[in-house]
Length: 345
Ligand SMILES: Nc1ncnc2c1ncn2[C@@H]1O[C@H](COP(=O)(O)OP(=O)(O)OP(=O)(O)O)[C@@H](O)[C@H]1O
Ligand SMILES: [Mg+2]
Image (spheres, rainbow, N blue to C red):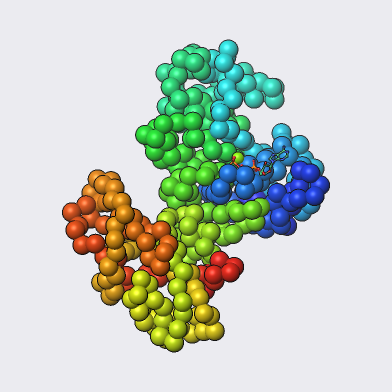
């Protein structure tokens, strides 16, 4: 049983500016959590504070119902997998996996059993005598995972573990890590800036921006009910179009779009709003707005069409054979954001 709780966590490296500015979250036992956000937003800092590799400026981190702020990393029952694997080059795969256990003075027979078990789970049995340089990138990554598994941790922390792998291998390792999570039944906290990894792997996604948790929810909810413009644009793509608001609704490229009573109520008193629509939702039939394509890109069975709506750069994803150059909008697919705060309306 090992949930992880963050209570009003703040972190400053320079004593002036908070890199993490009051993070609160409850991560449940056995959950697979993915932390996403742009470079420099504080993802690794959060993970390193949970691991105990970085001091916390204020707040509490609770693992397994125990405040761990003062506990050294080795006593936190966690294992950390880094982006660069950090394997010992002169040691065999077996010794790399056994190293942490030897340091903790486990019995030889126990180490053998644990390493073999982990090697079995990860398909590494044929490679136990090889050195890291005799392995492929994916195999090396599995050794790094194996080193974490043998310790039998309550919480796995992974910081962009797949970013050194090529695209195909990433997809493969993605599902291997998911399977591993199922098999081990422990809590995983996984950092990435790859939105596909986040959407496909997570039970819940924590979206960080500027040191603040913007939203912490299931992939489905984040995709369909983003809390603000940042989240909407970060997970999945979204076009953002500024429009005037009048008594009937909005206007895009001269086309008046009537909005339902309930939406108009939400927009009451506003003169301007940011309208959001996902590229894949631009095949609607309620309103067809003539556009001038600037570029089209064939991506296989579909193509991306780039154009402007109310002066904003937009993109639609349409079937490859489509020759209808209009943007199709159904009002149910529209999102609305406050043009000042970016909050969803
Ligand atoms: N040891 C440090 N001393 C001072 N500032 C630091 C230190 N480590 C990180 N920072 C700063 O804290 C902020 C958050 O860094 P962090 O490494 O957590 O970001 P990240 O989200 O993991 O980014 P990336 O996706 O590039 O790995 C950044 O502005 C970074 O420059
Ligand atoms: Mg990082």
